[in-house]
Image (tube, rainbow, N blue to C red; front, side, top):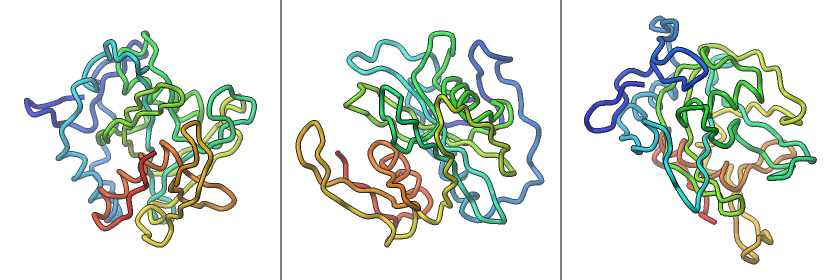
Length: 236
């Protein structure tokens, strides 16, 4: 991943892979892929963003927070842009039964938070890390209940991935159109009993599921890049 003096990514088809592969190896060129308009807007706005310095190298001591990373993987499906989420199995110790982006905690062997996001996505969904073109990052999100500081990366594939979910980590795959995030009528609110007491929380309904918490906050950032009139989730 090449970054200029202002912290902006200069080449979105290059990235560091940590200890799991060649550093800076270029992805196959997708220059001839015509992006649907929402994705073209998203890519250009991500390119204009300045990176948090921690994204460029290995994360140092972030106490009391633990570093982690997730991947927002976007791709066209029948000319409509989609992203993928997962339903976490009920047996997991943390966030069981919740809707999540693929990702997890940083491990020293990763070498970078980007490598964390790609490794976790490959482990959870079987998507090869070298098949994803990284477009940029969003602002980090704090998950208080598990003490994680999550860095979201946005990546692109020119076609729908062939998902091979890991049943130990994924109970169900959810493919969600980006139009859900920009539909101002889609977001709902409800009262939930949290560790801090009863709070009003925002969520995106999708089928029988509710996308809320850190995942909704991160997707709210993505929605704002796609459409500045998009609603933002309530912070909790």
